[in-house]
Amino acid sequence: MFETSELNNRNRTKQKLFQLLFMMMTLLLITPVLIILTTLIYKGGSIISVDFLFTFPTDGMTAGGIFPALFGTVWLVAVALLVSVPIGVAAAIYLSEYAPENWLTRIINLAIINLAGVPSIVHALFGVGAFVIFFKFGTSILAASLTLAIMTLPVVIVASRESLQAVPKAFREACWNMGATRWQTIRRVVLPNAVSGILTGVILEVSRTTGETAPIMFTGAAFFLPYLPQGVFDQTMALSLHLFVVSTQVPGVPEELPYGVALVLIAMVLLMNSISIAFRMYLRGKKKW
Amino acid sequence: MAWYVDKAMQVLVFIGGISAIIFIIGIFVFITMEGIDFVIDRLDIVEFFTSEYWFPSDEDDPEFGILALIAGTASVTGLAMLVAIPFALGSAIYIGEFATGKTREYLKVLVELLAAIPSVVWGFIGLSIMNPLIIDVFDVPVGLNVLNAGVILGLMAAPIMASIAEDALKAVPDTYREAAEAMGATRWQVIFKVVLPAAKNGLLGAVLLGVGRGFGETMAVLMATGHSVNIPTSIFDSVRALTATIAAELGETAVGSDHYGVLFTIGIFLFLITFLINLSADLIVRGVRKG
Image (cartoon, rainbow over all chains, first blue to last red; front, side):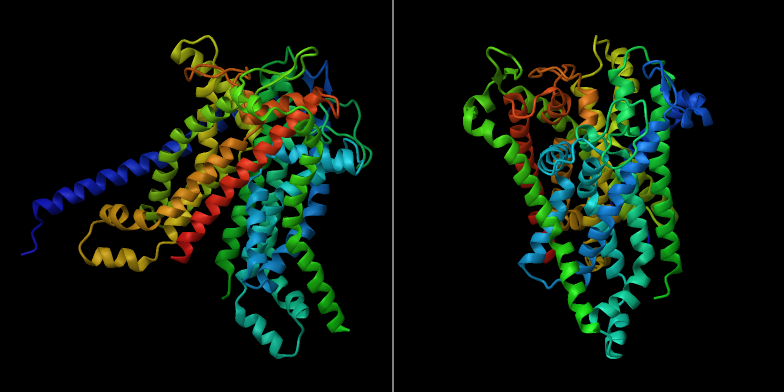
């Protein structure tokens, strides 16, 4: 009675074929990453050592380590976070807890999307015009970090807003009914429940900031410096720019050196992304409501 | 007391909230401030967009035509979209509609990691892996060209497009799928006849955001295109992109010079184009949410 007709069979074959096709596409999208990672490890792995990470470049950057670049990246990221995390979390709190559904909120959302969509080199031009020239910070860590902070602001805002909105409305209502003010509710009930989600967003931002190159090229990162930066008004080397420099600007670099730099950079970025993802999954599993 | 704190915090977070608007306006104001002198004194808008001669630092007779640079950006972005769109949509459909449970989680994580690779690393890959590969496979003298940058940019844009496209598919209510399945439709019939049409706007938005990303990409394009001013006639020609030109030349210009001004003028142009792309993507996606 329930025999499959020819039409059923044809449809089923077609479905199988399509499923296979889409699976191949997904796999093809993912294979390049694996190929890239293996190549980087294969060609750059041999140069990585404690010495490589903790010594200065020597011989016109054709030998030696990457310490000042690593050190500079940590500086740039740290200062950028100091600026963007407070602003980003405040913006997320406003959007999630206060913002009414009106034109202003729509414009804010549009501005966030655009801030993320403006080309990185335009952010660099902004950094030059605003921080280096107008505010007279010069080419410095401060100017570069501020540029990075504004560029990566959307990452913090979006992640924080999401985790704030995931806190159930009932939590807030219960607190209001006890006579708490709006801010007391946010401070004592909403934020503690959202803080780990916000943290995953911050880790994601660290990863983004680490990899950015164009915005720091003219605002504070130098091709080569024989010393470490002493404060936020000094220039610094940075890992991402260092990769650009040793792979395009310096003649006579041994092949494994840029591979090594690329490997360190991509390892840092992917590690932080993985931590952020793992943390997010752990939180999702733990959620009580 | 609590009431004052409450009011103060409300004002503070409001300032945080509108900061994004302040910054986006700030970006426009500051790049315009640096470029405005050039725009008023020197810019010949017709020549700017129609001349292919880009000799901005020539002392006697500088030429400021960005046609070749636009052609460079457009050819690379175009090829990138040819690469990225099928893969992005294909994997969005697979991850969103076919894959289940753990497989789906792992695939999503991998796509997210793919999107996280910094652009300078992609540029390095174009330079060191793609370049010799293209020379070998196609037997051409130079491997840094439209093909190289297009593929690299396609791989960069695809994961972002895929995850936005997957969101668009997820936004289609399950009741649509259930209704179609109840009528006896197979899985792929449901996808092609019901889900894809319903998610049409969101998918279009994903593609537009991918175009915007390709347009604005800097480091990868700087390193993989070959960086020579050229209107390409084949995918094996080296080109130079708008963004890469700024990145390569800003360091060698004197603040306030014409060359400096024209680079900021290109910046204003890039800002306006990406603004338009993002705005239309947003309007299209929002359209689907309301419906």
